[in-house]
Image (cartoon, rainbow, N blue to C red; front, side, top):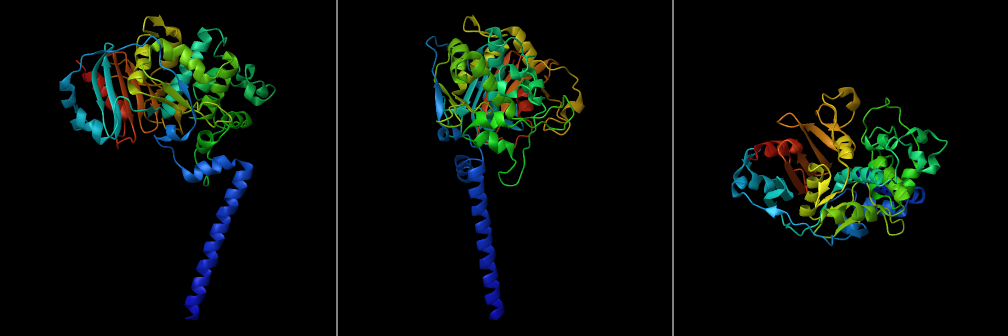
Length: 397
C-alpha cells in the first residue's frame, strides 16, 4: 500500500510539474512573442480551409464590368478515367470542393462536391504567392517599381546598411533570398511556418527577421518571409494596401463576378496575409488562369505584360538538381519560377501552376490551351496532383 501511495504521489507531482512547465512556456511566449499568437496556436494549432472565417479580412469587390465564360459542358468528361476511377468519383473521393476545366476559354467541366457549390468560398493557401508575383509584375508595368533587379532596401529603408540590402526583389520571387527559415521546432519555438501564419503583426515579423542562412548562394529554399517582404514593397511602392491594388489591377479588369477577400494578420495591423490568405469563388479564380494563358490579355484588356509572364512562369529545363537539394522539390523535376511552379507537359512544352496547401491548384497548360482549377480540404492521398491535372489536360480532345 505504501508503494502504491508513493506511485500516486509521484504521478501527481509529475503531472503538476508538466502543467507548471506548460503554463510557464505559455506565459513566457505571450510576453516574448504575442498573447494573440499563443492563443491562436493553442486554439487552432494547424491551418484549415475554414481559416478565412477566423481571420479578419478586407473585401475585394466584384467587377462593374463582369465577364461570363461561355459554357459548353462535356458530359463525357465525368467518365474520364483518372487515377483508376472516373473523374466525377475522383473529385468526390479526393476531398475536392471544386473542379473546373476550361478549354479554349470555354468551360467544359464544372463540378462541386463535399458540401460545396459554385457560391462557396475557397481559400488559396500558398497559391496566393503567384498572385503576389503578378502584382510585382504589374507594379513594374505601372512604373511603381523600376526593376525586379532592385535591392529590396530601395523600398524597405530599414534594411539599408545591413546584409539584407544585397537581396533583390527577384531573389524573393525565386525563393532564393538566403533568409534563414526553419519549418520545424519545439512546439511553436523556432517554427517560422507558425510565425508567418499566426502572428498578428506580420510586417513587424518580416522586418525584424534579418538573419541570413548558411545555405549555398542561389539554392532554392521555400520561405514565407519572402512574400511578406514583397507585400511590404508593394505597399510602399504603390501607396495603397495590397488588396486595393489587386482589386484595381486585376480583379476588376478580369471581370470578376463575385466579391473576394484577403485575410489580414489582425484588425490592428491590417496587413494582408501575403503567403496564404486570398479567398475566392472558383469560377473567378479561373479567370486569373485564363488571363495568364492568354499572355496577360483578358476581358478586352491587356492586364499585365506578356514579357513579365514569360519571366515568371518559364523555367529552364533540364533543371539543375543542385539548386533544389534539401527542399521539398528535390527530385521532383518541378521547377520554381517567380512564385509559379512548372514542369514539362505531355507534349514537351511547359505546364505551370499556382499551388497551395491541400492541393489548391490553378493549373495552366498552354500546349493544350487548358486551365484547371482544383480546390479542396485535403490532398485525398494523391501523391502528385499536378501530374494528374497534366494527364487530364493532355486528354482533352
